[in-house]
Image 1 (cartoon, rainbow, N blue to C red):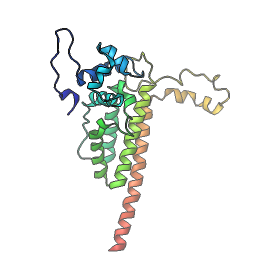
Image 2: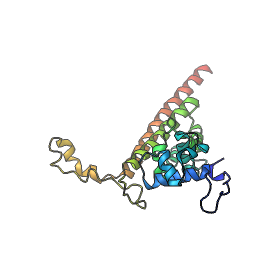
Image 3: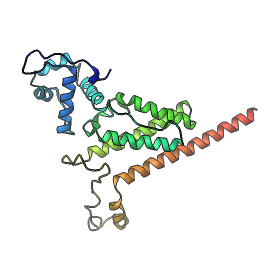
Image 4: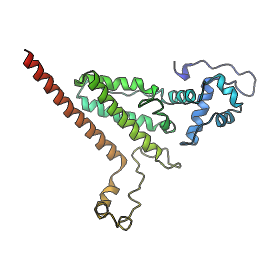
Length: 243
């Protein structure tokens, strides 16, 4: 059951609603949205709610439980529309780009995505879609698991770093691929000790983050395809020897 599906308790007075887990999680998400990148504490959250810090522990076990709940609340609406058939690399590419767009819609929780290992619990259903793509491609068991972890780890790590490096006053309506402009701010004089890099500076500056993500995703999927082709060829050879 998601936090939004949990029943809200009736307020105990006419001025301030009573504390519930859902209300606490919503307040925590608001704090992260207002101050992205800051450390969310139980004290600051209690101040946001006008409550005593200890009263929060009736609804959240500890800070980790709080962060997991906020993560679930923010990402519960993620549903990727991935074709159920077709060439597997095209489907996986749609998965990567779709997840990137969805995560950019929730930039406040980017630091929480790796709360438990390489995947946040809230993204298991999203990962299940990718598993189906890899199984349809012909990957088996451990090969499929490894391919999924490579694709998911790359996508979420890329987006997490992408969001983390955005300026705090970044326009939320800016396109996803808006570049940080770090190379545009350099000059050949800044790179006088690195002539090879200085010569390529115009090319570095014209490449935006969208192009980097697209190219890296394609290279990753092409590499997985080559590995799969080799594996399938090996399987075919073993089967022919045994027949």
